[in-house]
Length: 276
Image 1 (cartoon, rainbow, N blue to C red):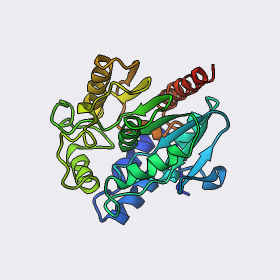
Image 2: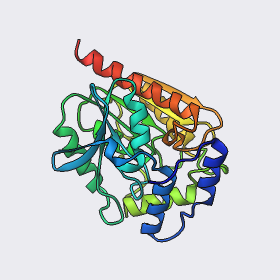
Image 3: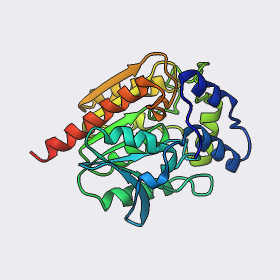
């Protein structure tokens, strides 16, 4: 298990000093070293629809798809995040969906849909690519709500923040590279590539959390607007000064813990409404 940083300065140093430009196994290991921190033994192993997952907590269920550009990440890298969400009285499940480039789209969508189809009433959540995946499932399958942290929603050029500098965890060139691995040959205006241009009218209540300094800020702002215009119940919270996926470190960043508390409370309340 990687030792977690104790302070924000240490965390920022760890992220800056971790190389993410090698081959795919090296980059996956780099992401794991940055993000991991809670022993896997703290989680329960489950399987649904032929897809395995790790689960933490007790209560109504939030299915959370991990981020990492569909190339990095795993349930293990998101256990600290999931445990923070579970403190809102939830059982949080982290499916182990297939990753690109070995298994490009729609492999991860197939896994996500199979897992959700074998579940009861759930709220879907996810960060970054995981938020994109949750949106793709929600466009096809009914659920009680969507709890998303900085989902990747637009590759058509509408976003005005993708060219910014200073996002500690993301940059436009890397983001585009991962998209080419995950969705090779797919046009930017395909609704599966850019959910922003999809028909959003059937989405359930949506809670979005974004970071003020991230390159994907406009992805959330534009999605909130489009969903609201489509008649979706939308709420959006932007945390100033934070970088992409800052919620991965709720034990180090108090604002990350606060963001997850809002997402968890939304999921709990959405599931409670379903039982009334």
